[in-house]
Image (cartoon, rainbow, N blue to C red; front, side, top):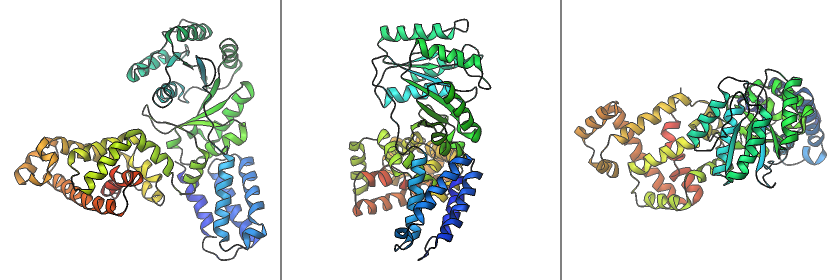
Length: 457
């Protein structure tokens, strides 16, 4: 995510880092490189030009160039302007209308509306404590209705029973009435898309919006299409009263141009971003956190949020006690592995930790997934007694565990060695300063898997 922009902007800013004095020409030369980086990163031309103009105007001020660290002041200005360009602050979803709150998702075919509908429903249920109803109103794309019904069933979220022969407007009206009777306080309408914006599509969406007024009309756009996603957003924004945007496939968008351009071009906030295929891979969009990622500053707040969703404060404190007493077992380690798998890939987690951005690019996600499965298989092949006390695992037990897990004795030996080293390291860290953050970086598993992070392509 944002790898291209990070590398290019970082390269431009490197030339002024550590320099004790800067001139206006130094600033202008640097910002010229930054503008080139933004344009190559698929950022809208006007957005890139305006961004660099604002930074330059602030950076050539006397208070900046004559400060003790002008390079840091300029980087600070770049960070602030990146935040401003992407909207300033997170835009909350409006759920304050009388129930059922209607959310209508619109967009072109292939943008990911149907899967995003399911992800949004799960987010609303799990984090907002709402009772959503999914409404399949795309009667044109083959299997679209069945796809949403399948996704709803897998997440145990109700889906309105529509048919391909129904009219989209009728589906929306009946679904809203059904939600009222069934005590569903949010209705998510998955509308039809087209290969391009046309009158028929807009007429249908306008009709639904008039008869079933949505509190939120969210455009779902594919971030990987870059500037084209911005053009699509502009087209929809001119035809419909959009309230916000959802950018999908942001994890695959190395350039990041769409995320940087959307707000400035359309005037509409990005409310959520899709960062993977899993049902929980939808996150609120935080401009300040994205700006920090672009500049390689990490995103510790999102990392903490992900961890706290998976582990309670009580569990974290219990884990710290075990580390202090050197009682951390393979059972605990297995729980940490599974928690981290729920939080996302190792590379995405590493990219959120300041200073580990470059390391995250060296991690092969597929290889790490295989490594996780191998570790899990080895631990599950141990007896309960062995998982609770690794010291009893002798040569014959290692051979049995290797055979049972489909691995080698060398694999088992390697895991045992890493496990012992990790216990020693975490015990030392706990002595230095326990607490919630200590639990996250150590007990929570991030630091404890340093051996896995160190395995490169």
